[in-house]
Image (cartoon, rainbow, N blue to C red; front, side):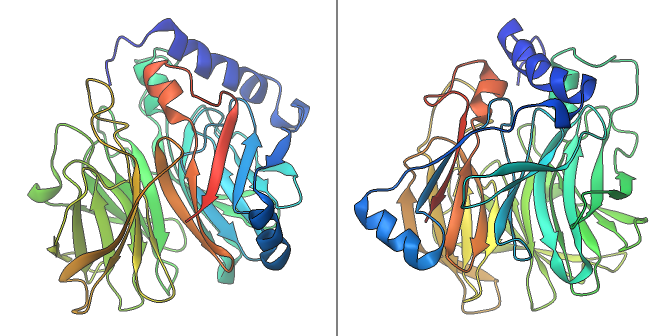
Length: 352
């Protein structure tokens, strides 16, 4: 991204944050909702409780991350412009759960239902590049832990590590509740205790890039992490992630996508990958797609079993639900480039 951001991009963020940071999210009218599906899709939605496509009208939200909340049987989406987390239900309601706690983008979101909490990566990176926050103040980047029932803040863990432009991006957790957070700006993976203490930061030369680095991350039941590096579409297996010296191995892919954004691990052991060109310079260079990868050797190698061109622009990540895998396209290109979305004011959740 060019640090000299166009006024249109600054305006988008200023308008989106004005009502939330200044007046409080509760003062905002709730966004409308429309579920788009054909007759076959409508019949399927009656059986599975979710339509095949949710076209949600919610100006200013721009979700990058989405998660499934089994306690509500609903989606949770972050806001890259408002620093919020909202509930999106199949009945059409869109309601706030986490209200703004700072002038930040909420990016990756995940639900830790056994512990009754929501985890979210947050950063003021976009606001800082566009001159909306005072550049002399320290950057804000970290992971938030929120009560799943009420949205109340439990922990805000600073992961900026003294870096100039940190960018906490995605988050996952293991069986013990240990939290892992990627940073696409400074190319790291941070480990945080279930009580909100930063334990250590993983750096590896293979993570380094001048583009966008470590992005989507998931915890595998086998006890390791799978992490995608956006630039180059590389996938890594991180063994012993809670130790001070984890072992990092690159997963050999039969076909590397142009990028790896969000990841989601399915109950059958396959990995769903969202790929886009949001951070690539010079306009659109690659197609938007969603892939499914499988491994038969514990994710030392993997093959592509499905490669689906995505009908909504810029898919960023996936929520696995009992009714299928839903991919979010949140309109982030508007913020990153100032170019209006083809469906302004809307974001999309589509079943894979």
